[in-house]
Image (cartoon, rainbow, N blue to C red; front, side, top):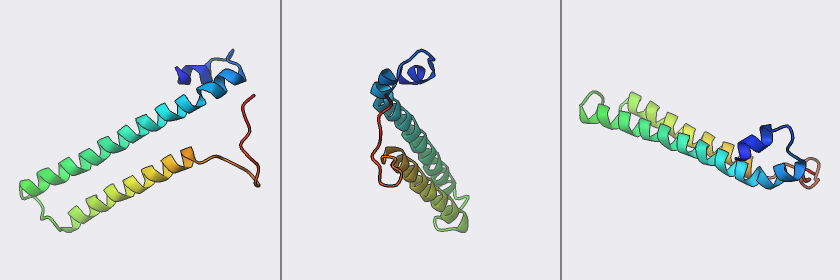
Length: 98
């Protein structure tokens, strides 16, 4: 619903301002689910490779995949943090979308 309010040309500023928290919440929820899906894929791939004895537990490939998964978590947290923190310029407060 919030997505369509932002793209509807006749929506007034107060309606958009009222829908903004829901818009952000739904976007961050979708992004978080994508991150969890990617992390599950990393874990599943590494589990299958180790159980089938394709690679060793502490091999270079295993360390590379684990490092990539950790970087993905850090990147995801930074994106979520940047989305949540209020945006201000030169000490001004956040203004409403009236």
